[in-house]
Length: 286
Image 1: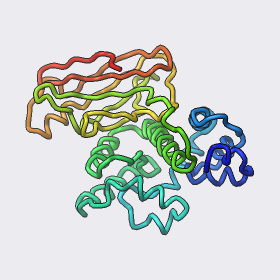
Image 2 (image 1 turned 120 degrees about the vertical axis):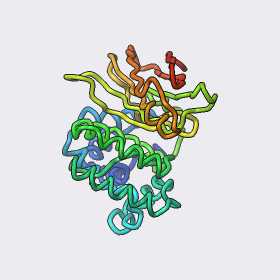
Image 3 (image 1 turned 180 degrees about the horizontal axis):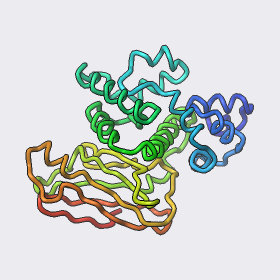
Image 4 (image 1 turned 120 degrees about the horizontal axis):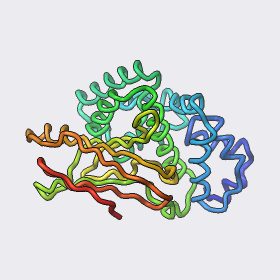
């Protein structure tokens, strides 16, 4: 449907469309009540603002409960019939995965759920099963408080993707993720694939609220959901360079690279890392 058609739906029908994108009834009611939206960026911004500012832990956990476990492809149609077409495409990266990897995903998710009280939520679109397994195992090291914030952010990414699939239009006018990064291995001249990166903000100490893994181009283009703007302040990005080099049998002098930076406004912040086993460089990119 078009944005105009969405604006003209009854409240109940609009809530139904939104509820298929995100399982939180409160969120769906709030976004539906905010119509009409004059363009898609305003809808996306309202979606993010309601989720981050007006919803709470109960709403977030309600949304999480509407997802199948990562790797649980067989249960998609049985338990989540209304959103099965979304979940199946989102988890397309695991369709041809060996049983051994699927079992590891299953086992790690059980550990995650026992620790945090909800299933592992990740925006799986574009990620391979090994990448999701690496992220899952790495996120098992986070505190439940950090994971709640992480999962909430991943849910926002998933919601936006589903919204784009439900309402047609010029979604490419949305701004890029507020924070992006990429890593280049200067020793090989190639992108550094498979580096886990944490984004942290300051509370009592630094806490992780976003996490990703570099793709085949050495990039994480969606560390934050589109239309999610950070409050101006100081942040820290942590690159797991030790894990990257260990997987290649290479020793490194810098097993972890922390990069502190400060945001001032809603413009795009790109933090690249040029990496070698015995040195690194960072700067503000574009």
